[in-house]
Image 1 (cartoon, rainbow, N blue to C red):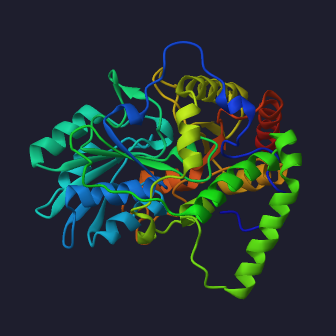
Image 2 (cartoon, helix red, strand yellow; image 1 turned 90 degrees about the vertical axis):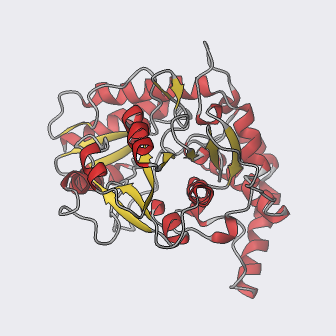
Image 3 (cartoon, helix red, strand yellow; image 1 turned 30 degrees about the horizontal axis):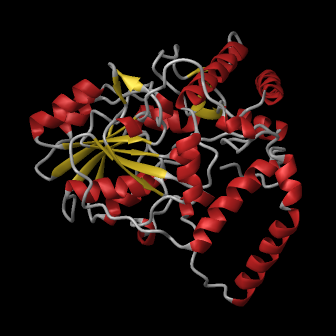
Length: 394
């Protein structure tokens, strides 16, 4: 997070926002998604899906779960919720799993391996599957960055015992995640509605995020009075009852914690409807095109390069991971321009640093994630390209 609270509001949205274009179809064959990998349960966030996957695996007190040293703080609470110990394995400079180090950390208490497809780029799944099978371990594919994509002709998520995805990173929704299994039944995962207040909050927040960036103008005008009334009512309730339980999971409002009260709640009707109506093909095509525009824009600029030299044909990126020599200064300049960004893994979990994995520490500090999502309009994309070039050259 940036410390300067006086920076301008981002000019463009970091994550997808709802518009009429969100429901357009893509041309060509349908792109594969994690949801094609097996049985599915739609939940409120990717971390809830991770928690449920660990529960289904049978992870419990005294067990160990191997996690990549390059990680988000939200990946650790599901392990702790099960009473297990996270053990961090090293990654390569491009965030691929260090298979030799991973194998060396397998012990008698190891129960599962979590493999994260960082920024949408697939991990070496055949090797990971073989390693887990050889040691009798469960493989959990963390597809939070990779809702759409394939590896060796199979959807991401199809290699693991379970997979967890974050639909809210790829769709214009307020909340949403998915638990998927290609190998096991999910009959034991019972989900329930979080109630009418949650459904209303999910719907209105989805709309308001679109309104905030100039989408759905006619609908915004029609709903202006009800939205103002809703805001006033909610503020009044919070003043009278400051301990009112959250109407939505903290993951929707940037919290990194896991609230166990949300582990048995299904995704909202709004999230499920938009997932059903959205076109994976359009999403993949536009994200790839935007990624390549940014890649071309920074080519030859000093002090920056893409984390990956190439964008594989089967990859649908979450963000554009920009590797910067002087990331803190560049992040400040980008923020002053109004460019939204994510610093994934910054900071890492307490106790995880260069001595644990120098590559993870470097990635957490030096990678700046820029938006390349499908809901960027052409004028916004042109502005983003120009703003990034100005900030890099400054």
